[in-house]
Image 1 (tube, rainbow, N blue to C red):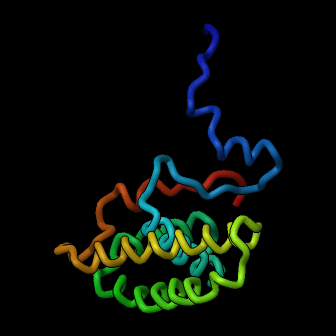
Image 2 (spheres, rainbow, N blue to C red; image 1 turned 180 degrees about the horizontal axis):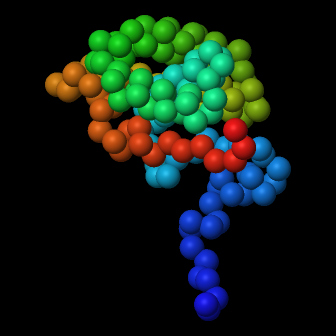
Image 3 (cartoon, helix red, strand yellow; image 1 turned 90 degrees about the vertical axis):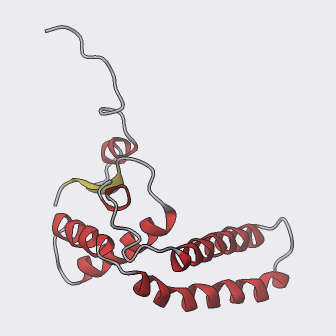
Length: 145
């Protein structure tokens, strides 16, 4: 039989969480676009709140992401832009180098990046910007239902 070699299939971040006591983990098999991951997460938790099981919520979120239209992404844009503006206006209340400032900076950078990605999708020619499997097929669930 031999000695099995250690591969990344055995030692994954998900395996670490499961061994540490997590009952279930939703993760990806490879790095996925940040905006696609954020939108997927919104869809996933919407389906979970509707009472769907983890595997079914994951499947439905993948379908929703895959069939998301360019116009639907445009609907996200005003809220993300408004949050970025709010963050810009609130910056002066934190002293540079403080924990609060670092938290503010992390959130601001995230919204700024999302807004750039949304603008890129708005100017793209594709009708379904997340239809390629690289955006939606990496998501998996492991552990107990």
